[in-house]
Length: 263
Image (tube, rainbow, N blue to C red; front, side, top):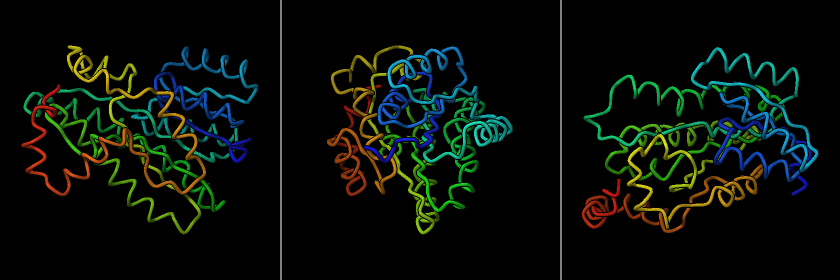
């Protein structure tokens, strides 16, 4: 994968989980990696690991994607101190599993600020440069929850449906300008995501044997970089289920009721 050598890959939510694995695997392919997250200490430790292992350039910036002013300032610094971003991976996000009636509106606003508006803000701050160069790749981490909503994920699913809608429109807008847009729709991944989303631990216990490994998901994402890959859907059987849901929603809700209530 020599196409990534020397390219600048910026990753939000890079302090752990999937973001961390994407950074490692992109660096393995020779990319210069820009690590973005709120937890600077974790980013600094990851930077050392990557440099010691792969000898590539790694840059660390503290970033809360929910703060649009901070997003603008940080991406200005990246442009000045690192260079123009070739690939942006919008990975920052979180979920909380609650029924709709139990969801506080401030909680909803906070999740949309990170999962949707933060993603849009980061994207807007690299698009003008990509358009000028007629090259670039935006990779948005969505979810199978953005294709098929289930009980106790009304808010989280709403944010991921929004990410898919935004990404699909953006893809058509920038296609003729040499910019690719890929959405990644994984099922449950074995990361610390569930420490917040599933405080009871019941959901993880119920679906543990089906959980994806972050390393495997990251590999698929890095393999797609600077290609025209439209979507990455994992695992395959869950993607089939979401397609069947679109075709036969009432039947799917009836047949899949037991699985849907795993949370």
